[in-house]
Length: 551
Image 1 (cartoon, rainbow, N blue to C red):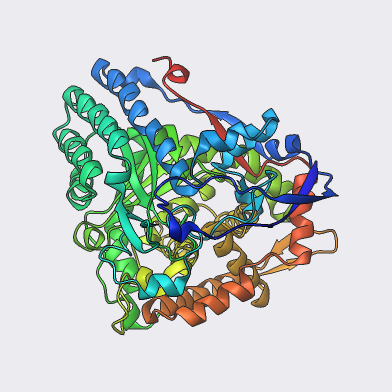
Image 2: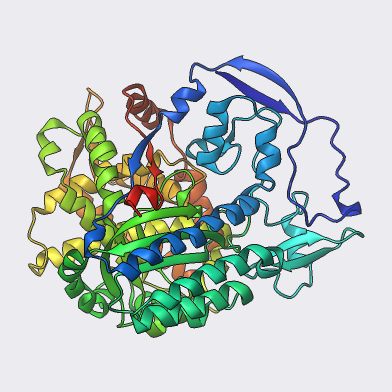
């Protein structure tokens, strides 16, 4: 394929002279072309297709009727997220003739390759704005900071310009009123079929929340559900897409079927959370908060993804709600998406280990370890600290655009720490080397998500921190050997560092850490390129929908 080097010419920045509530349009540019040996078909082959199914024989007739309704509601999240991340999807696709390029645009929800640092791959499209489509593309950070606008930092507002060029806010529920009304109607129709009282209450409150952007009551209700077999996560939730400030939440949705047997196996771990919080390897003031005691660990088969969670690298576990007040009062729920997780293990993690892990340690790559590491990553989101200790507000507010990357880094490293502590207690009985070797291999998997991903940055930081601490060695044949003792020490050191940075709300120190370690250096890139050359997928895409379930 031809790689396009885009040179912006003749663009008049007149957005201040017109209303910009409309979606961004593709920018017309001239191009110079250079040879790139990777074709669009090669890029598509970075993703392996997986069919999303579950055993529906255990569901009641009404539950089977609910799932198509929930899928219809969730599917609308795709349209809303497209607007948030890019703008007018149809106008973009109309400019593209090549069908493979259209498919790749669909995977990325836009013309920027999420696995390659948001590199543009469509002629006529320049760099992705850090603020996606949440802000005017010509708005500076300084202009935002000076603007005296109520709700400008809200999770649920767009910033736009009025005809005079002044900034104003547009609420999500106003921008998407027609679509959200339709979503709410699907949820309320499903609610009529629900027999579980907790799920009925949640669907009613979530439908209302989508129309008024007040999500806390429905988050509380979601935390109070205990016995429902069907679940849906839907709405503006994560802030990864806003790389300008980390303020704006993106629409996404999952339709889920609970694995009751696996969930029973996981239930006991939630009781350990207060004790694990107290034992975190950091000074007392950075772990003074008490996590909610109503936290849950459950396993699900996911049968539909839409929006943010479906863009580029796919989510395989969820820790929600993100609302700090709900977390402190109720804790959080950790949802392990078992069928998607198994697909990534089989089709990506094991093949990576066969290339990059020393043969003497490959027997320690196991699905149970991958499942546990992923699960306790989500548990770790609820631990540590949510508010700074020095009056800088919440950690998210203090660290701004870097908050997501550091939070993901915290969850990764504390997740392994929790595994080690539970292993000491005899609650986890597999070989600790399984968890550590699988953890190290997972770093390579997640680094491939790229520097535009919070998860990718977190793994880059951890890789180079571990390298400096001698937690692994790179062998002459290009494989890696884990030093288990030094990895344990590095784990504690990095846990302490991240928790301290979060508690201090030290924006400058975090920015420096990301700048120094949140990049892929030459040697590591060469090793990752070997994975690509051997056609090991970077991630998965889904064959999904009611028809795939036989409904």
